[in-house]
Length: 94
Image 1 (cartoon, one colour):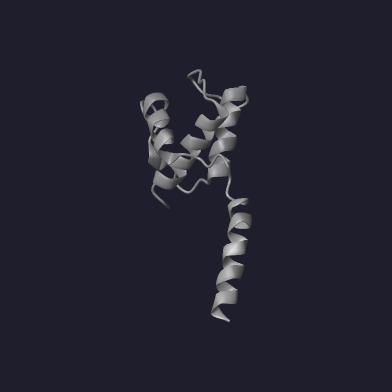
Image 2 (cartoon, one colour):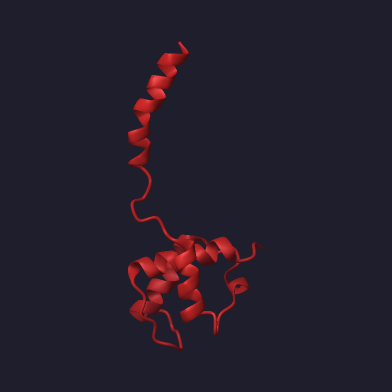
């Protein structure tokens, strides 16, 4: 009985990997980008409680020019994901 469960669990592993995003955000890379491009004017505590999705939407808006921002930013899609992951994981919670 135990061996049947073990075999079933092993058989499911490849399927579970399929649900992991191929390009998961890299918080460490996001920290570098935040430090280089954002930290001079912004503090992490300003983003407390915001989700990755909210932060990504805001950053994409800045890039598109639909959200006002005093400085021109040039971030790739992966930079935006990484910065959002860094901020949401590092900002103090409310």
